[in-house]
Length: 167
Ligand code: ADP
Image (cartoon, rainbow, N blue to C red):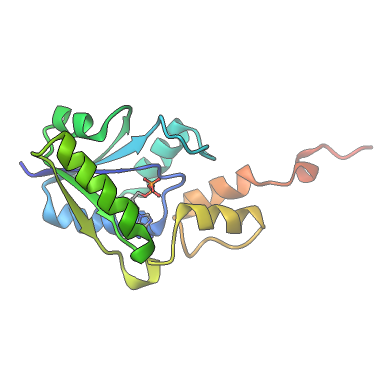
């Protein structure tokens, strides 16, 4: 059984992530999408929301979504996975990813990191930019699954609209 871990914050999942998951699934028998829940970043969505959105958005088989606390290499070993999948968009991703991959190799030499490139149209896509567009009221429907677009709209609903009108 060839099993890979695809770790990340997924705050929220985008079409770029889904593209990487599909590519990874072609190479591995099972892909475990590991949602980092002790992230240093301040996430917009709670871990449960990120997990639920991923589970609803992923429509292919043999992909499992799981929360991940602690070290990636320990999580991978506990799941019997020897590969870590990461997405590479542009040169800007490279330095950080290179450092992480080599550090993980130092921590566990059995684990290989492999990098997958998304479809060209997703190379400029990130959760951060999607959140910025949604926050400013822009249309993100081309970048995320419909349920994520709805969740973003709800998060950024202007407080004025949600206040009951004064009668
Ligand atoms: P992190 O918070 O660890 O950067 P993300 O959840 O943003 O994680 O992304 C997880 C992985 O998916 C990372 O390897 C990231 O480079 C990759 N990724 C994110 N967006 C895209 C995209 N549009 N195309 C390809 N890979 C992507």
